[in-house]
Amino acid sequence: AVVSTQSTGTQGFSTPIDRAFFDVRVINSLAKSNANKTLKGMYESDEREKKKQYRHRVTEIEGEVFTPLIMTTTGDVGKEFKTMLCHLAAKKEKSTGYRYQDCKRYTRLRLSFSMVRSVTLSLGGYRGGKNGDRTTDELYTL
Image (spheres, rainbow, N blue to C red):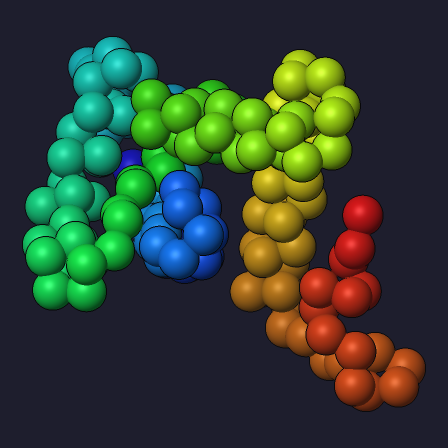
């Protein structure tokens, strides 16, 4: 059972000028519809489905990079998600000089807060700050 799905993009993920697009899907691995599937099987089928939906448009038409990011409601992530997290941690390590494991922990923590913020804003809506001109990123900067 799919709990949530959201698409996003960023520039400079793999190279300074490339744009990368991500589609985040949260699945409930404990749902009845997933009872006869292995966790690895769930990740692989959802990643294949997302690639089938978006890869042609993103890579061949727009010339960009597409990565499906699949995770469960319990916090486990799929193969491509793990690869993306490791890549981000390596970039953070290189740019800051911090240890790789600390960068990886920070990346996962930052991602967790971003996802909670996204869900909170989706459910409750954003009503603006005291000044009315602050963005959500400024309100939730770690």
